[in-house]
Image 1 (cartoon, rainbow, N blue to C red):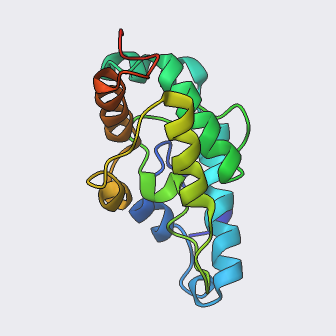
Image 2: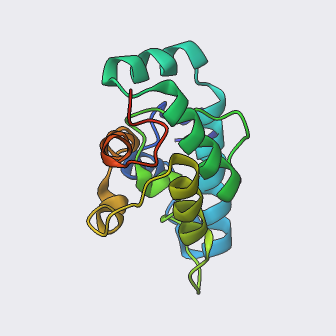
Length: 158
């Protein structure tokens, strides 16, 4: 199948995104990273903002919290600024665990610290190891629960 004719998934799902990349591209990490990111950006640009908002309303997570967490992730991982991620997006994709690199980066710790600071919560040690397997909607639900139980969080009353 011609790569220009590939179906671009609306939801950021690692298995579908990786299956869209030709095997020869997977052999060179920098080229693989470029292609993978390009597929993600295409998926993000075709999204309808209202449809994503409706998905969040159906999940029951406050949009204000979603916007804060999305903005932090977008800033740390250089996603487009106005990105509102979908509840079914995989954290594996959003937090760029798919990237093929030789060394670890500081993006994840910085991102976690900013989320904790902006929401007034402390991410538990039980959430962080599961992050690679979580959906973004589940992460936000966990953050809502943490915010409700935290005395310093502005989201505890919602």
